[in-house]
Amino acid sequence: DIQMTQSPSSLSASVRDRVTITCRASQGIYNYLAWYQQKPGKVPKLLIYAASTLQSGVPSRFSGSGSGTDFTLTISSLQPEDVATYYCQKYNSAPRTFGQGTKVEIK
Amino acid sequence: QVQLQESGPGLVKPSGTLSLTCAVSGDSISNITWWTWVRQPPGKGLEWIGEIYHSGSTNYNPSLESRVTFSVDKSKNQFSLKLTSLTAADTAVYYCAQQYSSLLISWGQGKLVTVSS
Picture 1 (cartoon, helix red, strand yellow):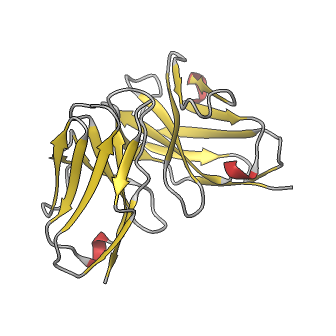
Picture 2 (cartoon, chains in turn brown, cyan):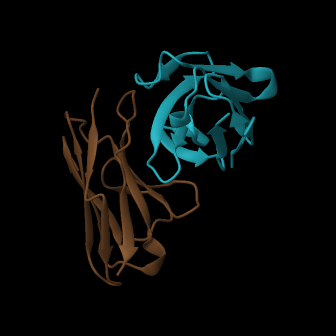
């Protein structure tokens, strides 16, 4: 089965900083990569799919890139409301594995 | 907009069986979509448990496959999860979700299940 590895596991950045999270698949998954945001105490929410397509309503400061095995989620200007844990997920086929998550905090 | 609601016991004994149901409203469980279970141990990440189609076809996480069973009840517009041989490691918030094009678009609020004697 394909494993999904995120880095870093956590980060602390200042408001308006640019933040980048990496997700690596152990085998190629084309662009079948989604990013989910889970705010503290809340249900996960789909942010990005097809590696780079923003879900409706997601602020444009979020962006995604990559294909094959290496993917990134970028927040161009970190805002206080972006404090959350971010998960990547492969969805090309089952098992639709999640990465272990990256916790983003404000410095 | 579809709504999903998990229900079932919040406390189960070690070596016992966890049974949860996800009630679907605002959509038919027989639509062309897969229905998914995800769990999250306290303070930890998301784990994909598996998915079921209204026909009964299933895909399970290989790490849980020997202990998990999904089912669909079309008459009640709901689907269910059974997980056997429980240990403390199965303590988690269990989420049901609806897939759209393999993406988890709609989620239930989650049900905390604690495995303890």
